[in-house]
Length: 253
Length: 253
DNA sequence: CGCCGACTGTCGGCAAGCCGACACAAAATT
DNA sequence: AATTTTGTGTCGGCTTGCCGACAGTCGGCG
Image 1: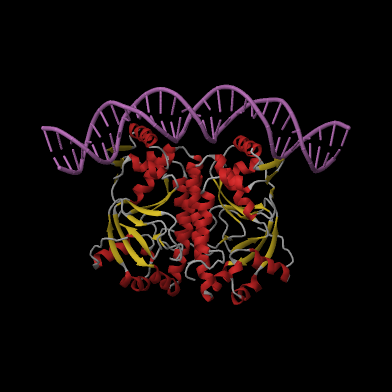
Image 2: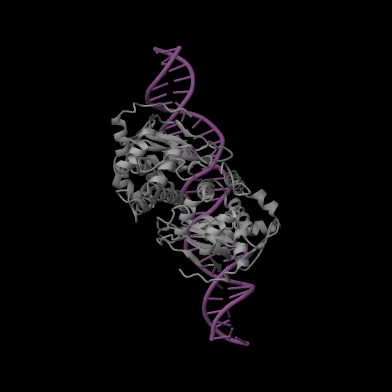
């Protein structure tokens, strides 16, 4: 995978360390340790960040609207999103510590920027900083919880609710309220037929919750979406808060 | 949670360190480091090993037929199994490093034994032994993969295939080919109606793949089950092999 | 023995969402 | 401006699995 670079100036670094929920919690010393090894990248929608089977030698910390979608593709070509990661988290070797090949593919769903750090650097940082180590452990738990919730969500909740949840999740991470994606790709993420997505989109639009045109969906009424969405949205957010807290310190740091 | 103890004699310890796929890979020195802090427990079906919200202060390494089921319960009382863990893995704080409360409940599904080790001890061991640290990282990745596969599996595969997969998974871990569970509880694990499970069970029995009586299912024909099961079974096992290998050393230890 | 609670078998109506098909519209390409 | 590509709208038939209901059965226990 080749990633386009953006200017690695201090402005970029500052917004990375301020814009990502994990990086934001780092002390000056922690930050100083990582900074020399950070690479910044601007990513466009559709780019593959990590291919199945590829070794996870680095980790991306999204900020600035970037949302990366982790997809599991099955034999037969059908695929679902198993997790979406934005400025609240990290993608790559953060769980496996770089010791395992990717099980899912990671694709840029909403464009934005990321701070990219080699796993070797991160592993050293974990050794040196108790906070970093603890932070990554807690984030791993939060990510696992997110995926676990999706298992339950897929099993029980109707697509209308799941679609609404997805839109809320996406908009949380997006830089704008306009999400550039087709109904077709949304269908692929939710693991349902395109025609089903179309039906749901129509209903949500009639209710004034969203507006869409060719290749883009706009969120008009977050509160309304929240009502039709399943409570998986809240459940995951609650666990995030509990584990990582708003300040990212969480429990017993 | 209170766990009944079994005699912590050397015989028990030996079978624990030989019977669990993770513990088995430890060197004599690694084992010596943990041994003084290991508690052995015999667990009965239905016991709650970890309640939602409880801090994960220790980790269980199942052996000897024990299978623990991680369940996510939704508002409304419906629940699904998000992961099943047997002698190939570990349950508890292994991902969160003990830094987060449990998001799912963990219930004993098939009776057996476990080696229980406090997270504090495990964390120290990770510091001291590169192999242990690497092993736990790789297992974390494998567990996450398992859950991710379930998301896709629930989204696409018909229950007949999923049920067959569950039976294979369970029998891999069980001490015998007789699984003591009711159709009702299997329905709860798969996240479907009991009547649906009943229909599936009847079909599988007619095909001679299983036999069941009140409260127990017996696997008769593994190969046959494999044919009707979805390939999620193989997909997860393959990733396990790739990451942990048969000897648990996996990639670049 | 006889009761009772838990588990299983079965049915019929019903809704969600699959799936293929096709027409249309908007953008991109030439 | 003409053409192609890509995305959207919609329909009808069909299957899976939900859901409530109820009857049958097994086994333990008083």
